[in-house]
Image (tube, rainbow, N blue to C red; front, side, top):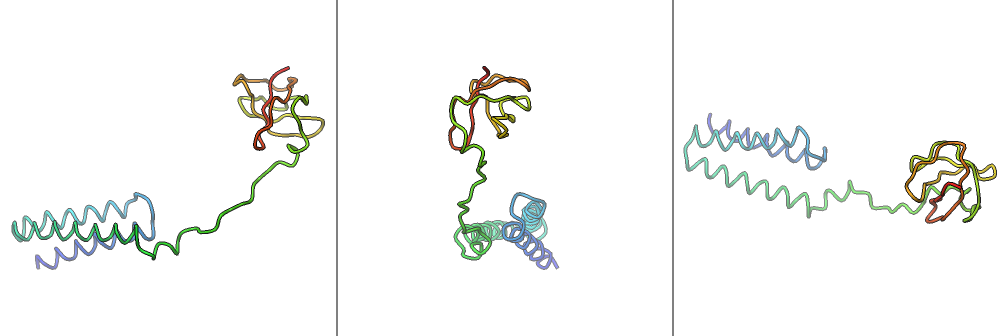
Length: 155
C-alpha cells in the first residue's frame, strides 16, 4: 500500500507539472500542487518506507523534474503553441503625417505628459517635451515629430 501511495503522489505531481508547463503557463496553483505532491512523496517515502527509499524517491523526482524542464525548453511540442508570425502593421495616426514642427494648436485635454491637441481641426495625441503639465485650452507649438509621436511646448 505504501508503494501505491508513493507512486500516486509522484504521478499526481508530474501530471500537475506537465499541465502547468503545457496547458496553463505561468506560476499557478497546478504548479504549486505538483511541487507539493512531489515533496509529499519524498517525505512519505522517508517516513513510511525508509531512508533508502526516500533517497531514491528524491533522486527520481529530481530526475523527472530535470527531464520535464528539458522537454519544455528543447521539445518540439511547445512550438505548436508559439506565435511564429511577425506583425508588421502599425497603428499610425494619419493626421500626424500632415503636421510639421513649428505648427501651433490648442490643447483639448490637459497634457499631463500626454493629451489631445487640435491643430487646424486635426486632433492628435501629443506629448509635452519638457515634462511640465499644460492645462486644457492653452496654445502650444510642435517642437518635434519623432516616430509618430508629436512633442509640443507651451507658447
